[in-house]
Image (cartoon, rainbow over all chains, first blue to last red; front, side, top):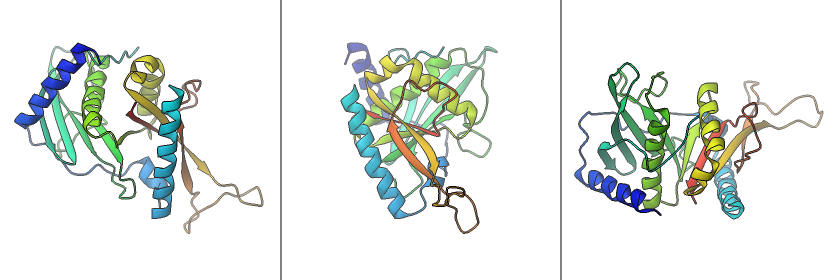
Length: 63
Length: 182
């Protein structure tokens, strides 16, 4: 990682530690999206998460 | 062209990280010389079965107090806005590498944006992330005419995820875009 990005990460963590959110934006959970619509059952969810892990491994291997 | 560069981002003005939701904010200059506060929200995917998937939402505060991610803004530097959002996601993933960030490509404008961002920034994104694409498919029934349908007669779409295929052009958009730490 280059120095510039490392410095930005350090700066970001400092801001996180201050926890200053001036405007109260809703922190409600994200709303249903197109992926939610395709996951109908627990079995679908487990299957997708398994496929996701495999795809991440494959993508890392391809780098 | 949108060049993602994690070294060129807007200054993050404030962050609220009350696990599991992270909200960061920054000011983005607009073409009419105004400046608009933009919020980045990283939050767990609403589907309780997708425990390790996070959604990234980006936009100004809407009248309902939520982030308006449908508004069309005229940013002076779109690349810098997106780079800032990607940087925040990167910071989050460094501390939580088990998660994958999802971007909903359900409307064409967003899908084009995400697709272009991944394709045109393959090298830059690959320095930090692995990128993935999700297609929807329907199961063809044995009669080879009909497709699998629910009780209301609607086709059942299922997700098919794969490492992002960079040979797919903008006529072959994915339905959903994801990235995880490299």
